[in-house]
Length: 194
Image 1 (tube, rainbow, N blue to C red):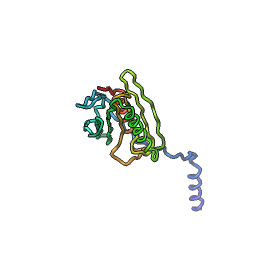
Image 2: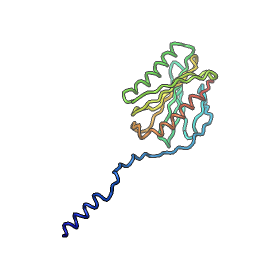
Image 3: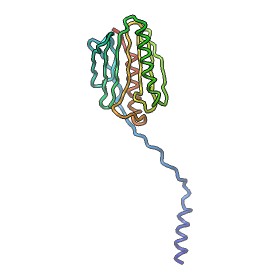
Image 4: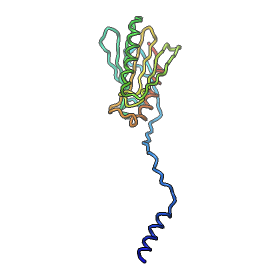
């Protein structure tokens, strides 16, 4: 009799619940960053200005010794563990210089194709301020998620790229990369040549 009792309990539990087993959805980390507040950034001696996010608490510049007037600027975001690296080179009305700079900027982006899932290009034109260029969004585990170059085609050439202080893991850095992508686009849109 006891065997029927246990068998009845087992059968009851097997047929009592008809709910389908559904796996839990994946949980994603929700990171919220402050709303961007931009200020005009005019670094002494550098032949261009732009607007930068106040979240970037350190902007350093260095003159590079070369045959052309060149500068390197670093816009550091310690809370996001990333830096936007800007490199300025003067063209000096030399079309060969311009062609070489364009090739270098485009080849630099193409070096990421080994690790990148995709590279999206977006042309940028601002006739009013004479700023023309290209923005590259790099998807996947590439070292740099965003890159750009802008020029006035006669005197100025500026490139920029975003790097994080961590091994590239696209899923982990995606929120910060998207936030800083907006800052890079804002830099492109607010560049003014001196």
